[in-house]
Image 1: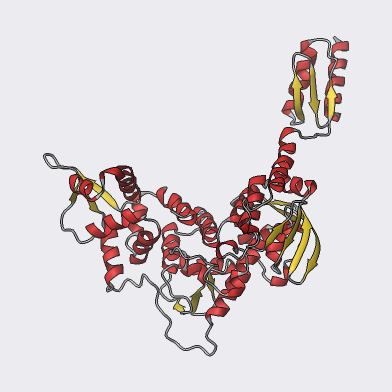
Image 2: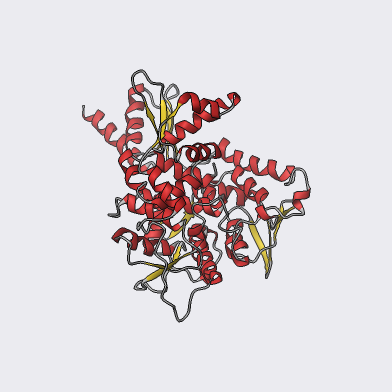
Length: 469
């Protein structure tokens, strides 16, 4: 199961049975879960049982799977039961049997054979437009919007990403903070460890991560979570380049169009337009095709390059780094952990230094994530080496992180030379209560704090109290 499938499956698994019953009434949802969430063995079992008129006994199910694959069989049956696709039927005097649940079976049959007036797969807009939107324009819109989201996350590098002309709405920024992908500190925004891990994912997994965050907060936004899920699964079944009518959408789904437009998942000419277009980010939601890999050249050059052998990073044993790219986003990501010094139209050069790695570690990026990014996006020339990255560079990046793990300098004040345990315990406890205590050593009657004014005042009050008595 891919990363994006796993993320969406974890969310689905947490839903109650009544929610599944509502979800499976939509044929597009049943088909999307069948295509996207189920492994091959599960798909085979579902298709074999889809037109059965009676439950399948457990002994027959065992006969379908080789004896050496019992673990896979048990895992598959468990998964189908958790997704409310399988149900066990146990009757006195009869062997245990399994059958497909309804409405899942009915909806899947409708999705595969067609028919019905459910409009679950969208209603194509048949009216001719004066200026129809092309697939290339949709790809460019999706690329700009999605790179705008990623650019906002890595904006702490100081690289100017404003040339993309993408204005993110406050709700999008709030969602990224709520998901722990960025951390706002006043007017500045820093990427977190989870945020950098998010950057390393392929785009389809990134989209599902964002949409899962959206789902988890749907009820707080006054939205029906079933409507939200159904609409997302419907988007995955639509045709790229085809306009679809908004007339049959619910109030929740109409609101979603505005939010998803900020992420580049759907496109509308205006908010009052009677139709919308799904972008490639939407149409690949329920397939294993990569959102970047199969799209236009400009989109493909955005972030994920390695899977096609189009890596762009060269790194030498002296820690010098060369990146053959003109993408502001890629340059901004490199700036998170490297000191960039020279920029040409199609290349940047810099160096990985102790300070640059320590800066990255301080905002939560780990050495393993940095090494993974460099390996994943290594230039084809680098890939001829074994290992891909110079061993000295890999080891030094890890050592620089370990420096911070071993020792952390904290500016503060040491209090010591207390004559009695009681004289030590009272100010030490007070320091802990006000949140300034960093370290204490009870046997030696010493403690260390970040601020001394309040502790000194406390000691002074205690001394005056003792004198008065």
